[in-house]
Image (tube, rainbow, N blue to C red; front, side, top):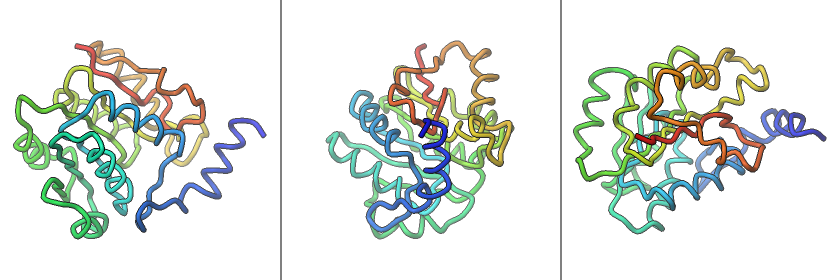
Length: 206
């Protein structure tokens, strides 16, 4: 079985069956290892998760943040409140759920109001995956990411496997990165090869 065959099999047969603490968590297991490494190295005090879905990954992030040991907060944004409702009883006051368009000025202002100059901020873009929306998120959230932290764009695999949304996140990153030299694509985060986020680990370098 080739790597592409494995990815297609995982996408079609396994991807949507994953869960964490009883809540759906749609992630490639190889990328979860990379996330653990990034969280430990960066030690963010705030994670902004764009796209909550059913909330499983939010819980996963929260448990890893606890292991880091620092005071930290997760701000999660989604058009639908289902995932946020699932999370309310599971997370503490260090969790903020926002329902609305992640690119709306109101949502962005609410997010910024929870960030101090001392915070280390990491952003995860996992919303609609369209080319246009991904570009908007990149432009709207790039200034929020702190130097040496990451803006992670999920599911560039859509472009690689020619899935429903083409052009998708990876093509948006390729267009955007040319005009934003203060970010670099960290291809070292793809060393396990079977990633759902090709060219999606964007490190802010200046």
